Amino acid sequence: MTDKLYQKEKNTSRSYSRKCSFFVIGLFSQPLFKNSETVQEFAKSPFQLTLLAYLLKNKDSSPEIRKFFESKDRTLFSLYHQFFECWLTKEHERATSTLNRETITQLLWNIAGQLYYGNSCTVDEEDSAVVGLLTFSSLKSQKTAVGFCHRSFCAYFCADKIFHAILDGGVTLIQELRTPLRNDVTDFVRSAVSTITEETKLEELQKHLIGAYTQAISPSEKILDDKARDLISDSTDDQQFYLRNEILYLLTRIPSKSDTIAQLLEIADNFEINPYMKLDLAYGAALTGPSKIALNYAKSLVPHSESDLVNRSWTLAYYGDVQANPYEYHDVYNSTWEKSRNARLKRFQSCKKKAIRFRILDIPLMYCFYVSRSWQDVNEDDFQILKNTDICCAEYSEEEKLFLQEQKQKLLQEFEKQLKLKK
Image 1 (cartoon, rainbow, N blue to C red):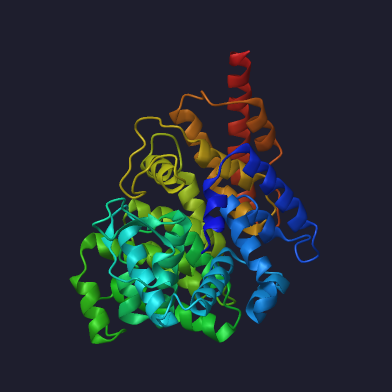
Image 2: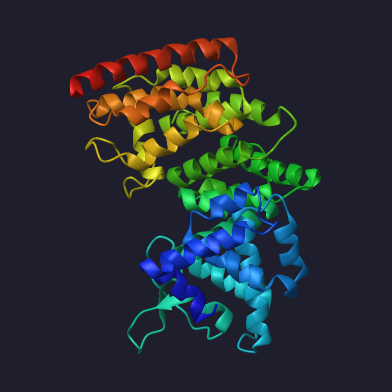
């Protein structure tokens, strides 16, 4: 990547802000970007806008880049993928990179895996397509990588490796999904899956995930090959938990025209006893069914319950209000919950099906959050958003509507009471 590209991300001055504003205006004025929801999402990140500018500059050099800009369904994953492809081409043209694409990708996958959780790693390779994306220790005697030139590259390469592992299935899938993933990686993985448009490929991917989960909960069955079964059986309890958890998360985010996923979730609901698995099952079931799993969990979300503590704790760590493993953190210190709260308020204002379905869980969780913090964060703006949240949607059953009406009314009544006390 050129120095100019990284300078744009590093420069946080007012001058850069003005340049970014002019760039966004110019970008959005082009026919390619008008009414593009994905570009609007990219616009929230200065670095992603920089990648768009880089690709736009090189649009005429590659049919794949032109195809990216002509597509109506540009994804986060495809943005980084197209940049990486363009980056490799240019490094090869300069003759500063001599390794083939597969070797470069494998090296970046492995480096990303070591750097993602804050470690450093020794890099022996001199190829510009590899080292040009990394930052190194200031000690000249060492070739120690301490990060990527932008942190999102690390998440992208981790996700790219996971995505290919899911496509392969078996041992590689199990190996990659045995560790906990943060939301930046899962966002990339989910985005990568959404780039698959062929029904047969989606079904194959789904088959790989279902096979691994079924094998994990039925160790005596011979569903996968010997190596895959041995890898599962040799995994620690935590590794098996993360494997099952990530599989169910991904399965409920893959488009499916059959009831296969809903049927699997019903089996999982009867098998899983871990409270964090119950939490993730509820969110997954809210999207795919059976809806009773989500509704039953929502009814358990009452202040001071196990579901309350688990959901609040996981939410704070997952959305980054606290820096911790979402499956280990306990919300007992009443930390700030700004990111978690804003994420839900944003969903309350969205018309997307996912946002609507998640209200089953989001509204009672909001009540629990406010109670846990003694209603200190109530304000008129939040009240108006909650008041205007639509719960009479076609996406809900009559039982769900009744539950949501009750939950919303309880939340608003307490809000009004607390707002009056503040005056």
